[in-house]
Amino acid sequence: MLLVLLVAVAGCGGEGAEDVTTTARPTTTQVPAPAVPAAEDLLDVVIARGELNCGVNEILPGFGYKDSEGAFIGFDVDLCRAVAAAILGDAEAVRYRSLNSATRFEALNSGLIDLLSRNTTWTQSRDTDLGLDFGPTTYYDGQQLMAKGAAGFNPLSTLEEIEGAVVCANAGTTTEKNISEAAAAAEINITLNTFEDFNVVLENFTSEACDVVTTDGSALVSRKASDDPDDEWVIFPPVPISKEPLGPAWIQNQSRFGDVVTWTVFAMLIAEEKGITSANVDDMLNVDGEAGRLFGATEDELQTKMGLPADAFYQVIRQVGNYAEVYDRHLTPLGLERGLNALYSDGGLLYAPPAR
Image (cartoon, rainbow, N blue to C red; front, side, top):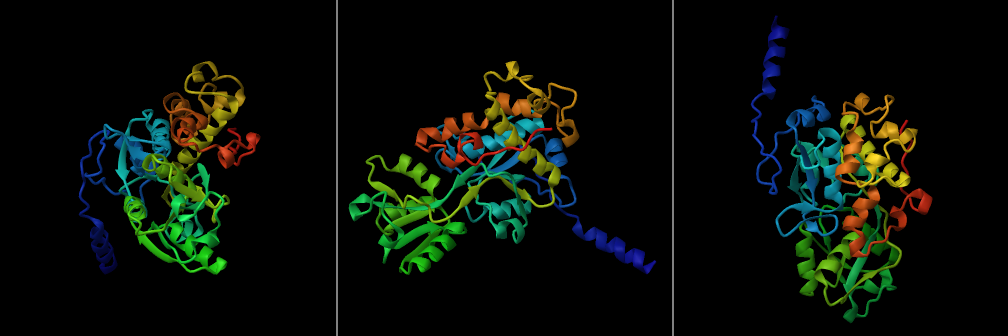
C-alpha cells in the first residue's frame, strides 16, 4: 500500500500545465501555444487543434518574411502551408511563429511549435544531441561570404583574402564553427563577431563595423537583393566553404507526424516530375497509377493508412503547388537558379521514393 501511495503522489507532480486558447490565422507571435506532452501523438494533437504551429523566419526575403500587410510568405512558409493542407485540408490553417536562430530549437523542444521550417541545416548534433528529426532536404545550400566591392573583393575572391578582417555572423548557427574552422585550415586570422539577429549583422556590415558577413549563400543572395540597390556587395567564393542541407525539423519520436511532413515534400517532387501543377491537378489525377494513389483517386491509396484524408496530397498540390511552382514563386525572382535543387532527372539532387 505504501508503494501504491508513492506512485499516486508521484503521478500528481506533472499537473498544473496552463491551457491557452488560440485564434485562427494570426500574423503575430504574441500568444503562446500549449505545449505538446511527450506521450501524445503529435499528428493527433494537430488534427484535434485544427491548426498547425509552424516556426519560420520573417526577415529573409524569398524564404520567410512578412509582406506589406503583415502576412508571412516565402519558400519555407509554403512548406508550412503544404503540411497544413495535407493534415487539415486547409493551407491557411497555420499559426506562424517568428523565430531567430537562437530561439528556434527551444521552440520545438518546448512544444511552442509543431514544425520548424526556417532555413535550418541538418547536422549530426541537431539530429542527436538536440533531439530533433529532419525531413527531406528542401534546399541544398552552402556557406559563403559577402563583402564590399570597394574594398577590393570580387565574385572570384578566395577565403585567404579576408586575412585580418572583422567577420560578422549569426549566433547559434553552423556558420560560427564553419568560418572558424575554415579560417584555421587556411591559416588566416579573423575577428569573429556574432549576433542573434541577422538584421543586426547587416547593420554592422553597412556601418563598416564588420568587413565581411558570412552565412548560407541563399541568405546572402536574398539580403543583397533587398538591401543592396546599388549592387555594391559581392558574394564569394564561387565554391561554398561548407555543405548546408536545409529542411524541416520536428521533435524526435513523432514518426506519424514526421511521415506526413516527409511525404508532403515527396508529393510536391513527384508532382513536378509528372508535370502536375496546381492548375492541372484535376485533369492529371489518373495520369498513371502512382499519381492515382498519391492523390487519392484510386482505391489503393495509402494516405488513410497514414491517418490522413485520401486526398491529402491532392490538397497540397491544388492549394500550394508542386516544388517547382513554390521555387519559382519565391526564389527564382531572387536570381537563385535551381542548380543542386533541380530534380535528379535534370542533374540536381532532388529525388523522391516511389509512392506505392
